[in-house]
Length: 132
Ligand SMILES: [Zn+2]
Image 1 (cartoon, rainbow, N blue to C red):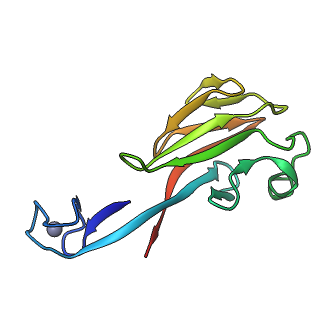
Image 2 (cartoon, helix red, strand yellow; image 1 turned 120 degrees about the vertical axis):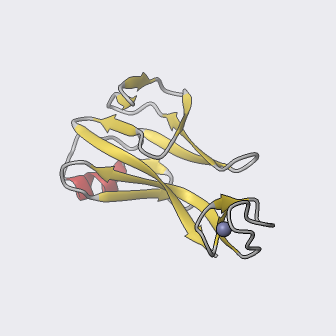
């Protein structure tokens, strides 16, 4: 979760804004990760219900056939700060995050603005927040 001041837009602790003193915050929950394909701008959302990249849906969306049942999994960890982890699966393609290969079973934290490559596709990553 994160708290955004309703008056000035600064992120805060949900009690009192250090910037403007407001006590009103929007509460946002992290619900997943947006993957924006760089050429087509097609966006794939992975989150609570659908968290595995690969398989028929993604293949059809991107018009590619060589992506298997699962290339990687998105995991949301809200224990301390809200973070998104990507865990490599035993898929057909090499996955690279910011140019570094991800092995099956390996887990890595990703951040807004990171890039993810799978097959010949490059994605821009963004956290997907939901306001209650
Ligand atoms: Zn404020």
